[in-house]
Length: 168
Image 1 (tube, rainbow, N blue to C red):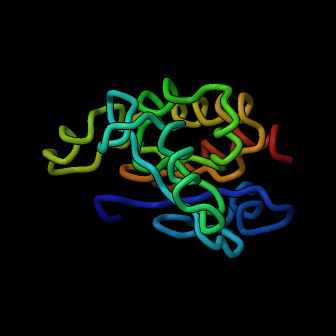
Image 2: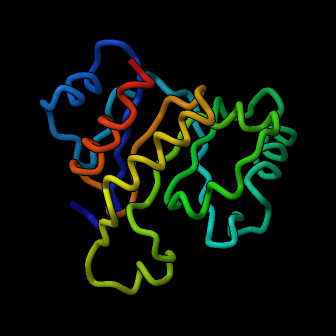
Image 3: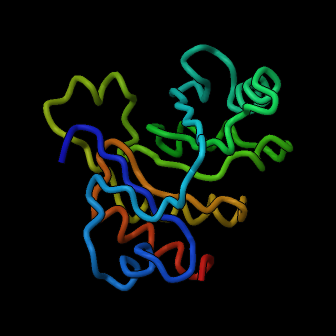
């Protein structure tokens, strides 16, 4: 596994995701069942709950959509940010309907600290799965879940187990 892994789970009936939910298949650094995403746009938040360029998540999505008009991304994902970094940025604004999912880092550590390590921090897979399940309960329109740095098969198994009751 590389220093940054990208893994997805997506609800879509009988699929590779469902086979993974049943315990068959490896998803390490794989793209699972993303049906033809035309142009998702990933946004990464830091420990101040903002993008590195400064805006909060809602401002960024609203501004990108305004500036791109008909060429706006089909949807947005939060990527490479732990729930502690993105959860405080979420609210009940209309912009949240444009957010379809998250690919969090496994560890709660700040990105700068993670980059200085000579190994991947895998955090707590069960805790991360619970956080994503809670996120889906709050925003049921989100249907793409996975992981970035430090996540692997164990994380995705736990995420699938936690999300299964609400997705199927």
